[in-house]
Image 1: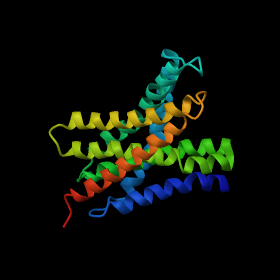
Image 2: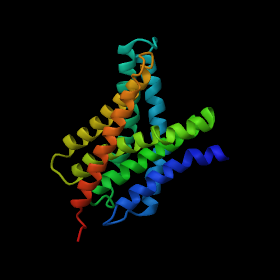
Image 3: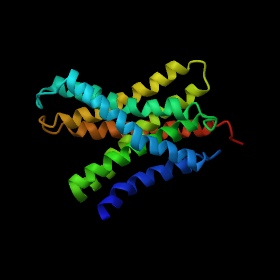
Amino acid sequence: MNLILLSIVPIVIVVLYIYHQDKHEKEPKRFLFYNFLLGAIVSIFITTVLYFCFDYVLPITEHTNIVQQFLKAFLVVGFTEEFSKYIIIKYYAQTNQEFNEPFDGIVYAVMVSMGFAATENFFYVLQGGYEAALLRAFTAIPAHASFGILMGYYMGKAKFSNKRILLNFIGLLLAILFHGIYDFFLFIDFVPGIWVGAFISLGIALILSHKAIIKHQENSNFKV
């Protein structure tokens, strides 16, 4: 039971933080929950299907091959996971009337991302125990949140722009880029000390996420 709580607590903290940052017009709790649920179930299902496809088309056979680990980080993991979230945000959240200001892109992208992270974290923590729970609370969970914020920032802009396709694509690409960089440095652990790059990239993503939140707060349609 304690392990389950440990896997959920960092998710709840991120969700409450983003909900609090939505200062000018709060989103309906029910719709937020639906986005979270779709991230936890549908996004995971899409990811699983795409993983099987990549495993068939592009099998990774050598752990110490940098090129293969690059492809695994950016295509197999980065693209697959972020695309599975993007589909839900674009076709479920972005098309809804409740998505009525740019900041909503961040809110719904984080809800979907935290739903995905909740399911993923549950299995990792059950397998890895307390050590995995504590490590992921300060690494994987903030990473998923920052990827969601960066994607959501551009998808929020896209909703109210005549360049919707381009801005949506930039959001997806940016999330894949940072996700891929983060995982790549972790995957090539056979290079001594290279894992530091993952934390540097995470730090940069968090800084950019903070700036994205402030910018959309300042440009809110509901700001008095």
